[in-house]
Amino acid sequence: MKALLVLSLMTSCLIFSINSHAAVSVGGTRLVFHGDEKEASITVSNTNKGIPVLIQSWVDEGENSKAKAPFMITPPLFRLEPGQDNTLRAVFTGANLAQDRESLFWLNIKTIPSVKKNEVQANTLQLAIKKRLKFIYRPSTVKGLPEENADKLVWKKIGNQIQVTNPTPFYMNFSVITVGGKTFKPTLPEQTYVAPATERLFTIPAGAVGNTISWKIINDYGTSGKEFHSKY
Image (cartoon, rainbow, N blue to C red; front, side, top):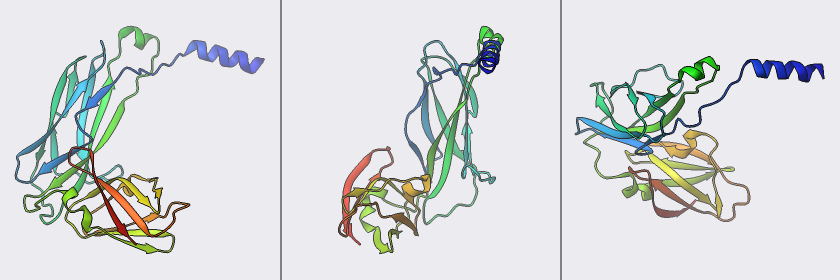
């Protein structure tokens, strides 16, 4: 009883509430920067009713990377009113990047909801929400599209795993991989794609029968394309 009383008193003294209305939509699941263009853009929209937000955006090489990506987002920080939208523009800063294949970065979009005076006084907790989108640099020398080259992937069985080799200059982002009638379920973000001119290992799903494999590639617009088939 004493423990419950103490907990009740603590709860009554400090009330936290998470603002669940900080909904901001992004006009895509990825952003492709073409090497022959001056910039790439994507739209963000504040779908809240009555709640303005701050939007902070930047490009990096990964969650734990300290290296600075050679792209600048404008505007990097701005206020977005309810029902309004704005355009984020990525500008290349001129660093040396591979010109015979794509390079992968990450676009970060952080949403910070506004705090009303009465919420500050009530010790309301406002949480910032960060979205991470794949940011792909495609040199002008790389022609074609990933889905046009997805049939070039080579699959090979190694023990209880499948190795996929990507001989193309494109990042191949998978929407689904089916091995022996069973769908592979990725547990890490890195298991959703294979980089250009590299290999990636996937664990064969339990219950998979036979030596057939099928896969679908996500295109530049974030949608899934045709299904490809092979044997391993």
